[in-house]
Image 1 (cartoon, protein in one colour):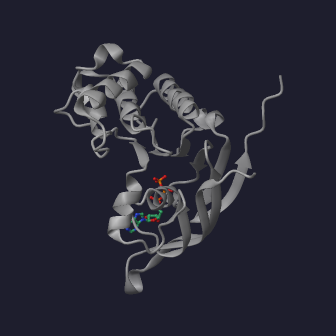
Image 2 (cartoon, helix red, strand yellow):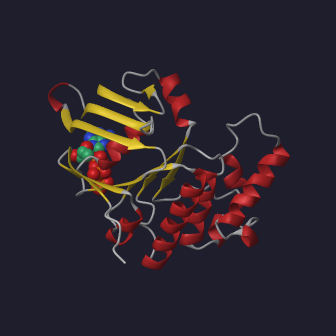
Length: 235
Ligand SMILES: Nc1ncnc2c1ncn2[C@@H]1O[C@H](COP(=O)(O)OP(=O)(O)OP(=O)(O)O)[C@@H](O)[C@H]1O
């Protein structure tokens, strides 16, 4: 049986602006991503990577073509359906977006707060375990200001993964990090996602992390121009 795609995009176009200012930024995008795959999206600035990522994440509404995420059509979906769709995803951004007034543990716990069937005690326990898994078991009560850039990004990863989402969307997760921390952060994402069977769609300009991908999708001027599977290294 062939695997069910987690993301299925067919002939997707996207426009910004209205009337004379209307500008097409995505052109006829078609792409299928299967469960458990790590896909890296590359391309020059302005080529449409973030726009595509935000459409897949239900952060803006898709206008034309078809975009199915976890079997749900997001093209033409109403705002309530988009809010619902966002709950299935974990998000990791360049600026980790942690709340400065909350500890690492409280930040991670926020990743569970939409999941009403979990008790407060379980939330605390799962968040602490997740921080342990990202190597911050001894920092759970630290505030973001007292953590390094790499540690903050690891808290953001813990927050994204604590609810075991089927899909992780990451936009330039290493951009604010030095090369060693960047590498550690993506290796950690890779290990945890493989453990959880989660799919990752990651946008990056960072060529040093391309090897964690199962496939690399390249965008230029709003077009998807190549989709390359990683060739297994010959030993
Ligand atoms: N909210 C918006 N309103 C109008 N135009 C936008 C908006 N967001 C993006 N664009 C335009 O859409 C095009 C694609 O932008 P996008 O941010 O998706 O590119 P990108 O490949 O992610 O770039 P970068 O690597 O610099 O982040 C660009 O021409 C950009 O100017």
